[in-house]
Amino acid sequence: MAYFRLMRIDILTIFPEMFAAILNESILKRAQDKGLVQMHTHNLRDYVIAETKRKNVDDYAYGGGAGMVLGIEPIARCIESLRSQRVYDEFIYLTPDGEVLNQGMSNHLSTKQNLLLLCGRYKGVDQRVRDHFITKEISIGDYVLSGGELAACVLTDSIVRLIPGVLSDESSALLDSFQGELLDAPVYTRPAEFRGWKVPDVLMSGHEAKIDEWRYQQSLEKTQNRRPDLLKDKND
Image 1 (cartoon, helix red, strand yellow):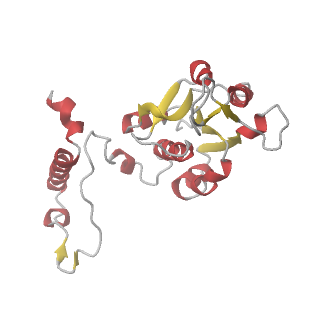
Image 2 (cartoon, one colour; image 1 turned 45 degrees about the vertical axis):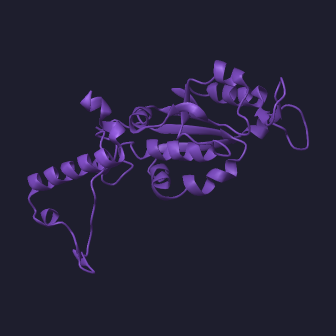
Image 3 (cartoon, one colour; image 1 turned 90 degrees about the horizontal axis):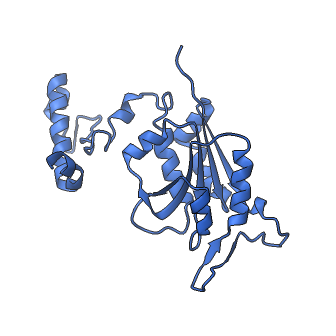
């Protein structure tokens, strides 16, 4: 009997509506429909104690400076509520100064059962959240977004597609760019010729060994041209 593992991802945000379209379409929707993953968003405003019209989750930074900071109180209350119900493998904070996401990190996280993602906003979160709750900080690139919601969607998609049973052809994920530290080779489909532009003959040959060699050489050449940094460790 195959081992079944249900993954759960909880996302803490002040804009839960932003996730509706992305989490409920395509591969992420199919993963949920198959019962392989559960994804839940939690509005941090629901965990504010003080009864204010706006249910403020942010405040001015001590010491001055521009920008608002997400406060520790609603975040702590939300995390502690969820933590009382289950054990989390990682408490992840999406932030521009985190470790840059790569395929290896997604592979590793896809083996976990319960993940909690905290979306940053404004100038970030109170440092005490990072010091006392967060176990991993992740960035999706060296640039700044308006908040961590889009980054959380990127991370979620990169993880969920790797869960066994999510993709109809599981070998597809294993052949993605970065899985073998190389970029993916060019791909083609019908028609075999369009406006005089032809599919490489080797791909039409049916010779599996030659096709594999062609794909490897194409991947290696593309990686050398576009991402030579990926080959640095191999050459050292």
